[in-house]
Amino acid sequence: MKLALRLALCASLAGCGSPGGIDDYGDLRESATALEPQLLPDARAARAALDSGDAALGRALLAELCSRAPADLGLAVMLQDAELAAGEDPVLQRARYLDRARERDDPHSLILAARLERAPAEARSMLERALRSDPANPWASYGLAHVQARDGSWREAQQHLVRALEADPAHLPARRLQAALLARDGKFDDAHNAYSLWLEISREDPRIDPRSRLVAELDLALVEVQSDRSRAARARLLALAQWTGPAGAEGRRLCLLAAAEQDLDRPERALEAARGAEAADPASALPRVQQALLHEQWLEDPEAARAAWERVLSEARSGGDLSDLIQSMRARVVLERLDAEPPAPAATPGQKP
Image 1 (cartoon, rainbow, N blue to C red):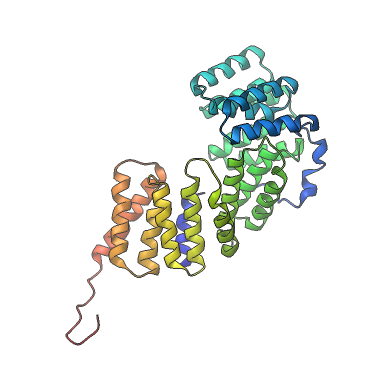
Image 2 (cartoon, rainbow, N blue to C red; image 1 turned 90 degrees about the vertical axis):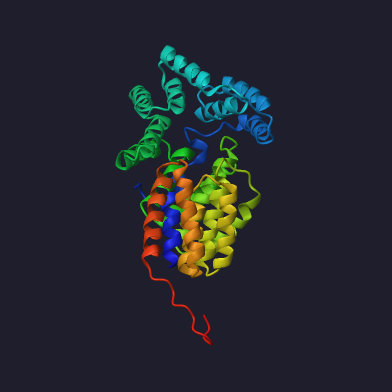
């Protein structure tokens, strides 16, 4: 039974050369994408402004930084995010970067425009053009790996990722994607090492959004649940309770906590976490599926299980993504099975039910 909740989790939350240790990153100071030491204080000030909610100040500081370090794509990416946080219209921002890319047709401009492009084919075209112009550009190869992974083209994603890391072994976004692909391939020990090392090294880089670090911590907790390290996952997830993350992060944290608690034979705590996940992210079907599985297979409460599966089905009818559709089909199958099962025999007088 322990496998059921874990499989539900992996289905909804869900390679490369195996990482070794910090030596795989090479000399961090010599990295092509390293932040220049003299820029570090101002970059930290910009990060502090963004994290405190002063997006206008963060954008102004980053615009000045980018003028001083025009080749630093990490700062330019940070500026793009600051522009959105400061209220720039995403459509107008995308058009502005696309116009710049068409005018300049240089790798830097093409990569930044591709990052905002929603159409995968257009993004690939710009990134391929950037790579033809600069074959050793790690950002271009990483961008192609990211686009291919998002499109489900895993083999191509891995090939581009290898090329990105050959160009710059310390490219942090590429190392982050490497960890994700290792986890996807079921190489949990390697993925655990990759995530742990990335979290250690990225801590000192202000270009890395703390919300991205939170997501990586959640990804690492998922790897720990998948690889029978649920006690470590539980401790990690409880420690993350005070972090502020992107939309859906709190619901995901509690879904992971439910799986860890269930793996540790604490079904009541797992149920409490799953209920919390539903409250934090009502649009997600996963917390309701977790509750149904706990009631049906662990707490042996078929009526509560039926009610939970019916809620999965009811919410899916009101609209949802592909994951919700799959969960609704699962709910139908379970409800049909429950309907086909004969009722429990009534207790005779003097007999305990």
